[in-house]
Amino acid sequence: MRRFSSVPALGLLFLSRPVAAQAGGTDTTYRAVDRVFAAFRDTDAPGCALGVSKEGRTIYERGYGMANLEARTPIRPSSIFHVASVSKQFTATAIMLLARDGKLSVDDNIRKYLPEIPDYGTPITIRHLLTHTSGLRDQWELIGLARGRFEEDRITEADVMDIVPRQKALNFKPGDEYLYSNTGFTLLAVIVKRVSGQSLRDFADARIFKPLGMTSTHFHDDYTMLVPNRTSAYQPRGSSWRVSVPNFDVYGATSLFTTAGDLLKWENNFDKPVVGDRALFKQMETQARLTNGDSTGYGFGLSMGTYRGARVIEHNGADAGYRSYAGRFPEQGLAIAIACNTSTANTTGLARGVADVYLASALAPATTVASNAGNDVAQQAVAVPAASLAKRVGTYIQPTTRTIVELIARDGKLYQSRAPNAPPLVALAEDRFRSETGRVAVFRAGEHAGFDVNIPGAPRPTPYEWRPPIVASRSTLAPYAGEYFSDEVNARYVVSVATDSTIALRTGTSSPMVARPVFLDGFLGGGYTIEFTRKNGQVSGFEVTNGRMRRVRFDRVAGAGK
Image (cartoon, rainbow, N blue to C red; front, side):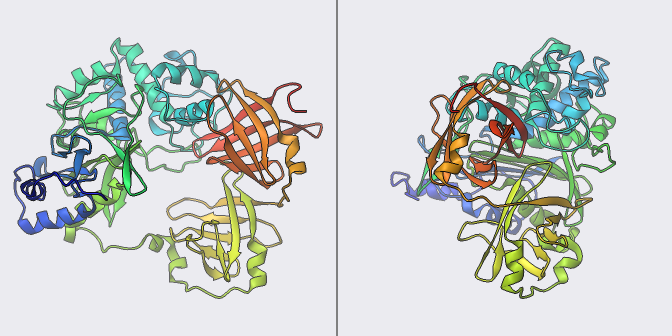
């Protein structure tokens, strides 16, 4: 990275020290924590703010890197960040306060407050919204599909409340699955407004932030509003940086502006409530259960898990170039808050590094991710004959999520990516392969019978089905060309043949999205699975799916491209 030559040497020395006085701890401890953030201490790059508390008392605060590269200002503990999905627990708390006031119940049908949401046959409750089990398609994915791009245009709550009621279907029946959905928390913000008569911003300010002395915190509902001490955010571009800040006024799922220090005040409130009470927070910290009895690991705006044997309650966030984390180890009395203004920051990983320093002997020995895969870890890699590998090569689809996996053989190994630097799968047997994340694919008996993926911690395997390959050419791609319209996202796409092996999909003034066929009527492009449908043998439409949005329908415009 290019260094700012005009920064004086004295300034460099200042930035290498803590920017706030510390309470407790030793220099050795502080140096160990600082090493966790070694990659974010440059004076010509963005970075992070850190806050750590023990039993409600702040024991370390530090800023690393730069708050604004253009103004050349450093990050300080008082720097304000957009903390993205860390916002969700505050929205959930607002709902719970209204429930405690007797204004609503978490088991109410949301149509009581949001009559514009369609009736899908099975009620969606407030509880479903709070726990990501509603089945509602994610708002950001819908808006991105509608526009053919995401970043360029300002997005408002009205945009979300226009597109969500258009949806004719859900991702799944409410309560059947856990699938992260920002839509649910935007709707919760609207419910707060309709029930309380106050915007979520005003309600949270009066009922949460002011009582806790979180003086640098607010829900940001005006993209143009000036915020002193606000950081800018960045993404890398080549050897330099580009500005990457959120461009929306939507809040509830996101858009909390705060500091690491204010987040520590909030974390302390869970154990010594000033706002709410332990009964309220116990509800928020209880994992949701699906209709089949499986637990989800997620409560009301909070994730529950363990790290090295210690219970941790936490949430991270990511929007544009901002990354954030707020969490606590309740049995050890340790809370950690991290806010970063670079997309390169893994805030959960950083928090784990801080926990390693402060909890040290209280934690179980560190293990690898793969060690959670059970007996498969103990198995050594075996050599698999080329003929056996060839049987596994092909395209597979997960029947529920429509996720596509392409397996290829190269240099005597099996890969699930075409990228030249992708790690190979480890062969445990001719029909059993392990990924670097510890997931194990077990192939079923019989040719092209598919495989099942055993995921560490998951209650049951995830199946994948084989799809026969397709040989692409302009003539085989020509039937897909035409115009298509979706009522659900109010968008018209033009599909054309781009090359001998790809099609292009374009809407409005967006750049074309290129997609390649992976099986008959199935394409991959732009992070989407695109599946064309037929009627009487003729292409009649297509459905678009990605990780948080399934089967959004486009119908062919009559007479176009036929």
